[in-house]
Length: 374
Image (cartoon, helix red, strand yellow):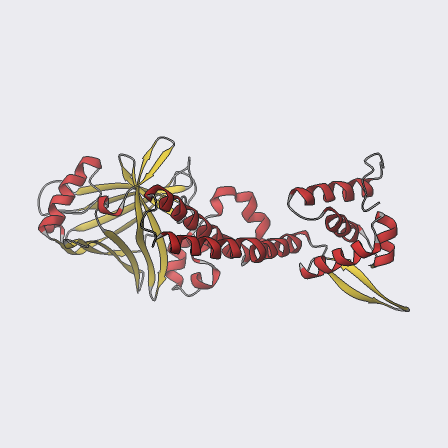
């Protein structure tokens, strides 16, 4: 007999050990290892290898190997017992600490090697002349997914245990600018920036920022692009007469989804102001996306700067119902960069720049805002 297999043993302790072993085997963990872990987790006293072997009916040599594996995972530890020279073992009983230990162990043993292997495959694939482009695209998609999962897991593993339960109960609302950046990077930002981007409004609530457009420029290609973009909602500022004119930004929490609606109004020398609508959501491979109309969206990479935040386009995509099509680079309008720079004294500078490899800087706008009254 190598492990507990009698499902007719009605004691709750035996049933727990039995099903923990079954669950472990489904996760790729040896059944004996999982049962020994369960026994030590439930035990109120340290146990030695002989006691474990007798209680579980597992061969002594199997017990020794399993204990070494559990010590390697840091799920159990050796402890001395007065008057007994044999090694005794106790398990980590804090379930959150135990979960973190398992997550770290699986990341080191499974995710990290997988990322390295896929990176090597992609590097090789990029140099192979006869490879089908669809195959390379799928490799890139897997590489991107693993990199995102790795970044997310690293962020979650840095969250204090006291906050994990609350975060899990929040579901998809866990994603915030703070979690995307990571705790260490987030704390390097000015306090005023953390305050602006760290709060989540109640569903349907809005905050309004008032300011002035201080810079507006574009080249001819930018003018043509901005006019064409009006067909999908006019997401680009384009009127040169807006310099010195009022600017108003309204941010409304999306009560139906995990994101925000943005409405930007820029005054002009004459006529009605230009109004730009967009929606930001914590979703997608980069963690945050902006939807600008007609199914077109931008996956953004958020980063910390010395005095604020930056949002850079990672790629553009087209959402058609349940289908999502990533647009090739030659179809993208250019590299979009949006920065939020804190200027102190409740002021901040919002800057938007769109650059093309072929046509240079297409559009650039700076607008100076002051904090809204809380």
